[in-house]
Image (cartoon, rainbow, N blue to C red; front, side, top):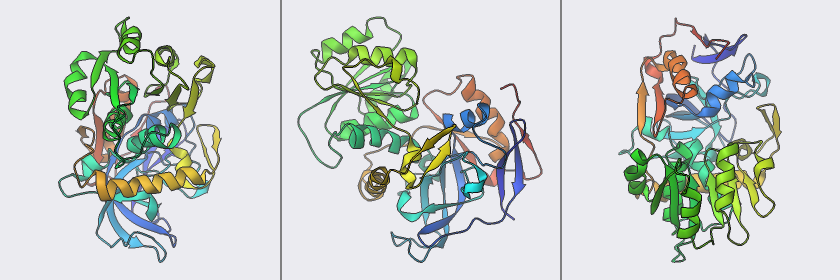
Length: 361
């Protein structure tokens, strides 16, 4: 039987054998080959949001093994695809997180990728790219590629070396924007390769004034890829343009946003077309978010990835398959993951081992 990393009592992750998940008429059954780690994976466990019986993990790459009768996209068995699923949601919803040998996803919410991109690289794309795209294009209304514009609209990507930040830089640049980002100086050259026009040191006390000077006090678009109290204060201080907007990617920062700035909160749990309970919150169905995600993933398949316009995150392969998740979670919790994506190869998983996450993490 296929295996999955299941949440059990006392924040324990256990490799268990489970039946194959049911493949609906519009779905694909996918054999997962690689999974990429996101902050939401360890946070859902650490803060107790992922209840016993659930499976964490969102980003995956794999191969199609079954195609639903009404699945769109003309997928065939054996094709390589990538996507993201809502990890850590209650088990009674019948949804499996990505840390599983098999997942089911609606065919409209996965994408193909070219052969020059490895499955490990492909696994870094789904969650971070759709988060950036939702914020930039769906929420703030910037022109969606391949639309061309010569306006050079300034966009601030705060913390550009994060996974979401790297995709936000690339997508904003493709859309014709003038991209300003913040990161430690060691990351500046790499972020300029991705498309950043200006890189600033986020620790520099003059960063906000520098942004104001560069944009002539007309900055109206920003995405905060940290979305914590201190970062949002600095981002909003730089937003002095007309009809200023900021995209946040974590809840609970609204109190730090001044009245002249419109918050655009983005979480990928809204793209699935049905209500979800995650992180002790209810995410209502947003058909418009799902429609956008479907369009964007087609854009990835048909234009952005085949033309080399979007580079995956840098991959750090974690040894041991899902047996390496404990170490990966610890690295991220201790802020030892920078400008990289931790990726696990499921074929390396040793099924006999239990993986325990310390209850005091």
